[in-house]
Length: 307
Length: 131
Ligand SMILES: [Zn+2]
Ligand SMILES: [Zn+2]
Image (tube, rainbow over all chains, first blue to last red; front, side, top):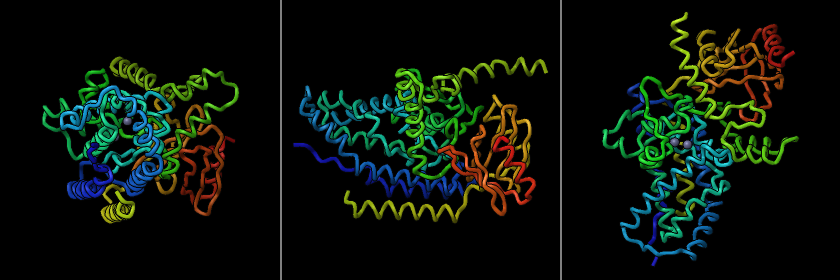
């Protein structure tokens, strides 16, 4: 019999609110540990609420897909605690790749971008979640888990726990965790780097729960106190309107794909190449920004010596 | 979770937090205390197109930036700066106290500038509209 897994993300809402209150009061009392601005925070909270609404309206697509696939499973691993733990770890690996694609494929970035659209980094930023995740088709990355015999309900529960874990790391209140913890787990320090718009911090630390995936796949960048993280997008938004925040990259993507005079290959690249790709080289991808920053930094000592 | 529980929880949570942030006001809105401050922010965000000239609006919440390639605006969005370059796509609408710049950019549709002096207003308008 299938055990019942609770709807953990929605159940955690009161906990999210309580921790935001604690962070806010702490920042106010200490005068450090982050920044809060009303309209920015309100946009984050409304995007969070919209994400819950999108889950109610569109959640059935992923659920139906996973349960249909379950009919074709190769094994049935059952429901023991050990299987649940294994499922959680493997689902975190799945999260790593979904998140990496979310930064490297514009079609997926169009959905994920709003999580990075704030120039603030506080607990409300964690709630700035996508409304359009279903359209990215990233549920396909859950296929191996279902075929291996992890029950869809267990997979969705693991995904929910993963999301809850990631809430508390969106803070500047905590500087560093103990060294053993920083070595294995995703932490506020690691995830601050992920939210950075500084070229050297772009496309790094995709981890959900375990930072080991970044170390394994070569995307780990430690936080450098000599280079404070500047949060937000390479081109920051000039609006707090949640509808504009949620859909701006989709609109940009489709207007690029549908512009006249492009080849089919160019149209596909506007949807599937890394964000910032352009057919005429008029924009910068993160790789170009990194290369540019690297050559600027390399030139700096010479420049200083010559002046 | 039943909608009858989830909905009030989310609505009350958002309202309560918004009220608390409004009362505590932990972070003041961004103001550019001098043209140099605005210039530094612009140059850091546009290293390939640094500012040649910087003029602040009367509220010190926006700056008109002239570069070698054209004009741009740097303005405060709450506690943070946003910078945009314009290629003659924007339209300025005069108000009693300043300008509303309609940019045609979906991600930054409208920018309000405080410019009580009519001559200054006209000059900004001409530069921004690229005339
Ligand atoms: Zn991300
Ligand atoms: Zn995040």
